[in-house]
Image (cartoon, rainbow, N blue to C red; front, side, top):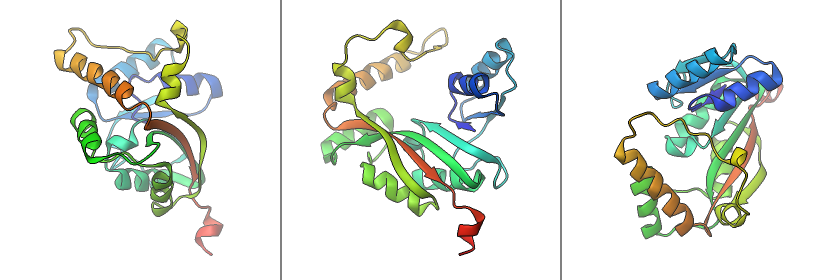
Amino acid sequence: MDVGCGTGQTAAFLSKSFRCSVTALDNHPTMIQKAKQRFSDERLPVHAIQGNVESLPFSDASFDFVLSESVTAFTNIADSLKEYCRVLKPGGVLLMIEMTAEKPFQPLELKDMKKVYGISNVFLETEWIQHLHRSGFVEAAVIFSNTVQSELQKNSPEKDDYPEYQISDPVDPQVEELLHEHMNLSRLYQNILGYRVYRAVRPSLARNQE
């Protein structure tokens, strides 16, 4: 399952690359509409569904993998992580890419983050790991890390390296302003903002019975 799938780019990649069964979920109806159109255009058997990651519309132990790309930090984190663990099969794997603080944010810095992103905190790496363990996961670890500063210092990337955007027409001026504020914050806090790829496992049945 690809949670917070957006327009379905990652879900489509997974379906084409691994020939696996993929479910794409997003809470926004426009994103699901765009994702369904992508899957139809590319003739991919990806199941797209509108739903909330804090209360996933799936039975326990439904998936082998759950993928979350920059989604969980913008939700009730404790609820979302527990839901990921619930819908994973025993031994199933969560892969999660999340904004991570390189050092603790100060109150005024957090105020800026809340204004733009609506979040009250930016977790340190150790705090993300703690939350994963509290939610029932084992073997929680970082498998890749980088900082915003490092990304910004790279040479100008090729066109194919840029994120894909499918902005609806007409563009809401508030959306344009939000994107502008996002870029400004990324530059302003590049020395304390980073991201991590976290990998965590739902315990196997044998371990649960110990």
